Amino acid sequence: MGDRAGRGGGLASRLAGRVTVAMAVAFMVMLVGAAVALALSREDLANSMAEVAYYFLVIAVVAALIDVALEGPGEDSGEA
Image (cartoon, rainbow, N blue to C red; front, side, top):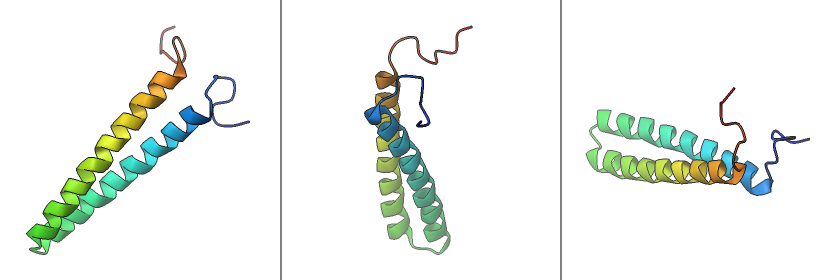
């Protein structure tokens, strides 16, 4: 019934996938915000926003790794 129906993905895997997307979007929004702040000569704000954006990126990568680990061996490996 879910987006991973038939692939054996459980609740934890679906949650990790959604966290990955949410954090990646947050990373991009914060990075664009940092660029805007820098363009407005707010270097202190731009640095803070870029730092937070980096943390969002780290969380997204960790969530993606968890998602891959929860898929299990042989699932969606890309081999024919």
